[in-house]
Image 1 (cartoon, helix red, strand yellow):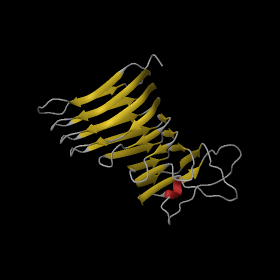
Image 2: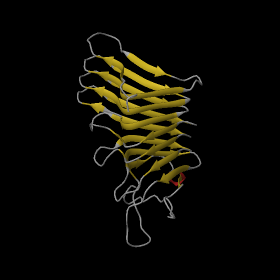
Image 3: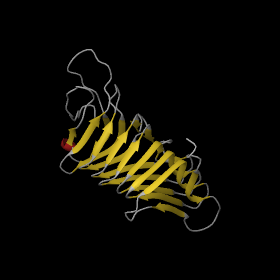
Image 4: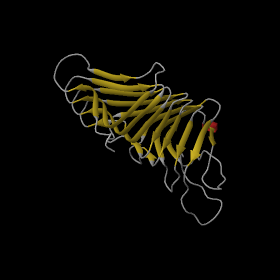
Length: 239
């Protein structure tokens, strides 16, 4: 809409030099934020020097159409961290790592109680290079389409007593290299189920390579319509 005309770049190493330009929008301190923007680039370098950026909130709403984290196109490394300790962090599309050079791009999304992140479309890495990490401690993450992709997974998901909301499809909706589940219970809500012709039916939700925690803490939350089901760890397919 007309209010989304603002484009922001945080922590941009666009000229040669020493040091690491760091740009952080820190809205913590218990004061509600009310931000609506178009595109935000969090951490960028097209030089040999490094760049770093971040967004931090703990109350209110931060609403962006697109957030591109850790954009590295030269030899300089880039670190980007979005920290949600409270409030609601809304994004249309979130890319966690965008690495086209040799400098390592690292994007971190950290969600703590009672923070909530809502991504209406997807969370991805636009390149297989670079690192994307999601760490949740009691917060919630809702995604409209997918997290990662087959062949280009998000590098790690850590969940401790958190809530993850995903659609269900014939293929997994989320791909991670490392899955670390801890705490007492991590709730998975399902927003949609694909068509099928016989009961019972099994659909993969999360694909992983390495289970580094206790997948038994993953439990079913809400299901669409009148569906009933449960979460199981299919060790043969790592999903």
